[in-house]
View 1 (spheres, rainbow, N blue to C red):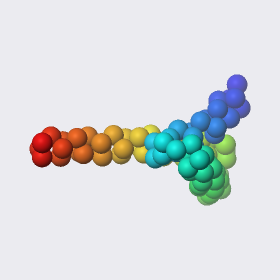
View 2: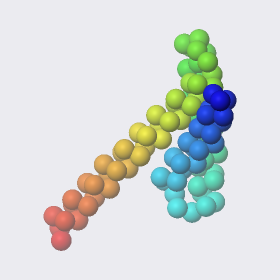
View 3: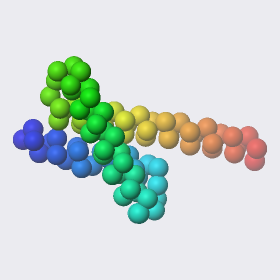
Length: 88
């Protein structure tokens, strides 16, 4: 069961993060590949330095980054809407 959860997180987190930054399919796929590599290498480095399980650390890094990017995008969009209201 744990393996299935880790696998689903490894497949969906990079794609979801890439979807926040691009609407074009080709660029979204390239971003997802880049994010997947970045998340994997970062998670492996953290797991090596802290001596913890590598799969879990990769998933934690990817999910935290995805939530952080989603939060920051929401904040940026809110600020943009408020600036447009002030100008309009």
